[in-house]
Length: 219
Image 1 (cartoon, rainbow, N blue to C red):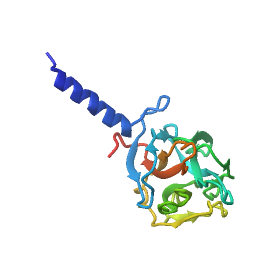
Image 2 (image 1 turned 45 degrees about the horizontal axis):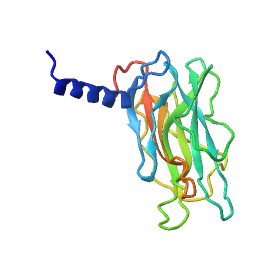
Image 3 (image 1 turned 135 degrees about the vertical axis):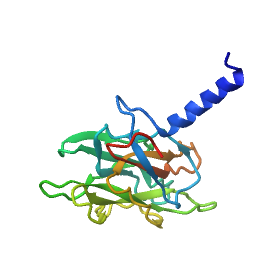
Image 4 (image 1 turned 90 degrees about the vertical axis):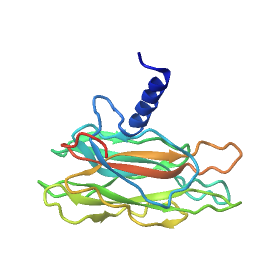
C-alpha cells in the first residue's frame, strides 16, 4: 500500500514535470533546450509556458510596449507574442505566456525568407533597465531575435525589430542558439502584477524553448 510520503513525492514530482512539459491542445511539446539570458529582473512571477502547435515553430514576434509616460509610472515591455508557422509556411497561430496591463501591440517582425526556404527564430537578447533603487523601475523594455534557415543551416542572422525598443535600459548578452535542427517553439514570461499605487514593471524576464520534430523529452 502506497504511503502518504510516497504519494506526496509523486504529487510534487508531477508538478515539477508539468512546469516544464505543458500540454497545449493535443500537443505535448517536444522541447529539447531552454534559452535564458542574465539581465532579467527579480520582480514578478513566472507564468506557465506556451508552445506553438506541434510541428510548427516561431518565425516572427510582436511586442506590447508602453512608451515613456513623461514623469508617470513607466513599465516598458508588457508582453511578447510569437508567430508560429508549419513546414509548408502556413500560419499556425500565435502564443504568449502572459500579458501585462499597459502599452500597445507593435507591428509584427518576421524572419526574412525566400521561396523554398524558411527562416525561424533561434536566439534572443533582452533590453533591460537595472534596478533603480528608489526610482521608477521598468524591467525589460524590448527583445531581439536571430533567425536561421531550415534548409541550409546557415549562420544565425539578427532580425531587425524596426526600432521597436522600449525607451529605457540597454541590451545585454545574447542567449545561446537553438541546437542544429531545432528552433524556438515556445516561451515562458516573468511578469509583475499591477502594484496599485506602487511602482509597476510588467515583464521582467523571459525564457524561450527550442523544439524539433524528433525529440521525445525536455532536457
